[in-house]
Amino acid sequence: MKFVSTRGQAPVLGFDDVVLTGLASDGGLYVPESLPTISEATFREWQSLPYDELAVEVMWPFVEGSMPRETFESMVKDAYGSFRHSAIAPTKQLSHDTWLLELFHGPTLAFKDFALQLLGRLLDYFLAERGERGVVMGATSGDTGSAAIEGARHSEHLDVVILHPYQRVSEVQRRQMTTVLSDNVHNVALKGNFDDCQAIVKASFMDQAFVSPNRLLAVNSINLARIMAQTVYYIYSGLRLGALDREIAYSVPSANFGDVFGGYLAKQMGFPIAHFTVATNANDALVRGLRGDLSRKPLEKTLSPSMDIVVSSNFERLLFDLHGRDGLKMSQVMDSFQTGAVQLDDSVVNQAKALFSAHAVDDDQTCATISRIFEETGELIDPHTATGVDALQVTPSGMTKVVLATAHPAKFAEAVEKAGFDEVPLPSDMTDLLEREERYTVVENDLDDVQSFVRSVMG
Ligand SMILES: *Cc1c(COP(=O)(O)O)cnc(C)c1O
Image (cartoon, rainbow, N blue to C red; front, side):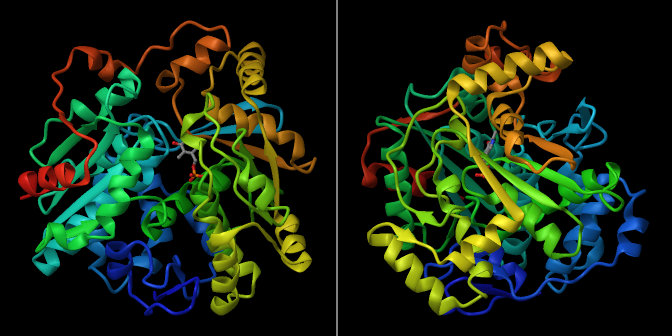
């Protein structure tokens, strides 16, 4: 498969280069040049496959040409072998017509493991092929850092440096990162806030030569391999819930639009998904965006912190399709958005409305939903998942509804306690998390200090 940039100017790349590149050189995001259409008969044949075998079938058209199929098969088996549930992505019934798709059985208890367990292995493989080493650098206030660390802890050609704001992340979140004692994992506790961490990572990517001869790598959700991995669980759950024979709608707790875009790709490949509901918290950029209003609002801190964003990076991938895949038009739209608000054309908004609805859920409603679902079902859901459940009120009626449960409630104790529940226990293999040995380095809020640290640790 070949990949093109949403802004039309960057070179067309193959899968290996797309995985290693991240952002396109014209500022756009890579998307498949074209997708295979899978027939209904093939989907029916796939109904009996276990998760990892289905994952190979769904992803192989993307990967083909970049490695032997057997190599990819064992990579996928290995990536999902660390999950705590044998179904990998099990579904649980919430009501007569509503299911939860549980995506929190991976090593760090959030859906990001699906993509990052695979991405760490893909990067390692492609670097080895080229005889190169890479440094993954990222800033985190939550789920991405720990998932990236878990995904790369066994990589031989990769170092991981994750910055978190010193004394400003919850103990569970911090310990999920700092208790991974692999030689290639380096946690920086920066004496600053999350924005300072992000600013230093961004400045480092403008100055990539500082890691030379190593390659600086990003694992944020603009990496297309992450989206590709997320396509699989829509098809896996849809096949189990009868998507081939009835209308099915997915409700997706959303921020950067990466997770829901995975479902959109499944639909583009011919899988019959009738509707997507995009749930946000008070940071409602996507609710406004799907109405055609591209604008920025100040960040609000919420009880669903992994959805606290100002700009939704992957939304550009949908806009590219809605603008007839016209890269020039997209660069104009994104250039205008760089300097102010943009109102999208009616034709674009109407196409979006045909497939997507969207709803913003505030913290009070989030807590009320956690309580209600517990009363109705005995299930304790996490605050991100709760936004997806509450947003079902805008899903067209009559469809079978699936809510993506994006995190385990033990990870977000604050919201669960605010909703009136005791702390949720961690899974049994993690109960000693608070006693495990930690390793991290406190570094001043200074670009040079961080870059020297990175150079001193990289292999
Ligand atoms: C990252 C994250 C989200 C948002 O996913 P996007 O791909 O950014 O839309 C939702 N819930 C949880 C728990 C997350 O970690």
